[in-house]
Image (cartoon, rainbow over all chains, first blue to last red; front, side, top):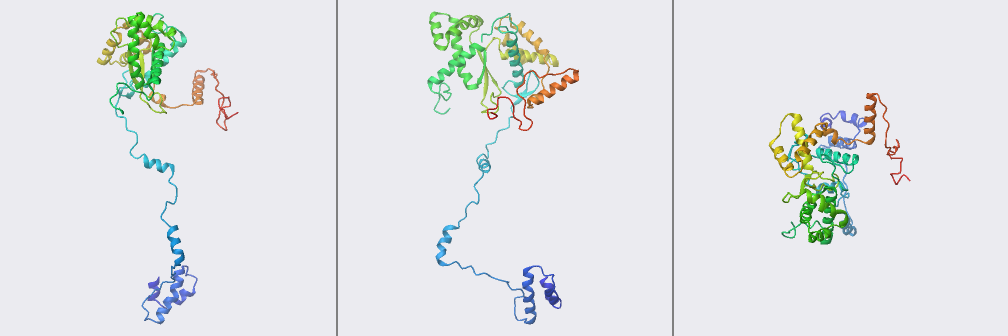
Amino acid sequence: MALCQLLSPLRVPAAAGSATITHPLQAATAPQLLQQMISPHLHTPVAIPFALPLRVPSILAGLWESILRAVPKKKTSHRKKRQRFLVGKALQDVTALNKCSACGNVKRAHLLCPFCVQQIRGMWKSQARKALGRYWGTGGEGITS
Amino acid sequence: MAGGDLKYRHLSRSSSHRQSLLRNLVTSLITHESIRTTWPKAKEAQPVVEKLITLGKKNTNASRNRAEQIFFQPWDHLPKLFGELRKRYMDRPGGYTRVLRIEPINRNNDQAPSAILELVDGPRDMRFAMTAKSIAHERSTGIGLRDITARNVAKVTRYRKNGTRELEALVRTMRKWKPRLTEAWRMKETWEEVDEKKRREAERKGEVWVKKHSHGERDPNTGRRKGGDDPFEK
């Protein structure tokens, strides 16, 4: 835009006067450009619109140093903290698996199949409930309980 | 193990506490023939039971006195030790107990390695039952008896009176069992879903299903039970 304005100075007054200027910088540069066209010995085609000198009074300097430091903005959340601490402590995959010989389900090696154990214990329980003091196979020896 | 090469597991207890624990475990085992506990506790209780049964087999005054010291209620448990168990293990040269690893009992707590501690050749002999179930499965699938099952059969029936006959009877019972689906077992159903399933099943058969045990109906808005099981309801 600025280059375009430089190349065609005839359009500049029209642009400056119209409502097409929306940006403040643009508004600021328009008079500067006019000035450039009038007096071409000035080297800067676009001047800095404004500059604020940052001057902290010497009394406040110590205070400034003591107050403003780089600090965490927020408390680390419980989740983030636990995530950080538990890195590398995830559960291992269970790869020692085999097939239950009594039902065909997959089970952990060296452990009894939980389904079969459950079924057998259920059988014992129901038998104990049905006939207290009798159990399968034998002729009436008691479960003392 | 921390603290040097120890002769036994301390089980995170003082000596007296540990002794009491083991005495209680032993009593439970003698009473119920099979108990479920953590694997280290089962392994610690095992030699105590073995020694106790040896005392029972000796059947002398001295052994009676010693056995009396182990039980908390000797009058309840001594008759079984010196009667039934003594008879059962007369021919067996040691090895009266068995520890079988199982899936952790507390699935949602500590996941501690668990085990079944059982009296061999008793009415709750898990290996005996598992062997029978294996035979039933192998027969139903037409695999035939596997080597390892054959070995287990030999182990399980060796000192058991009428062992072969009992095993065959159990196999026949187990062949009637329907295979249990793993997926269905793992799915957690609410009581309402179970009831609904039963109701639909009855409907399909043309029957009317009536709920037998009411556990308190749930309030549709809050989802809580109306019964007295929730202390915050009151």
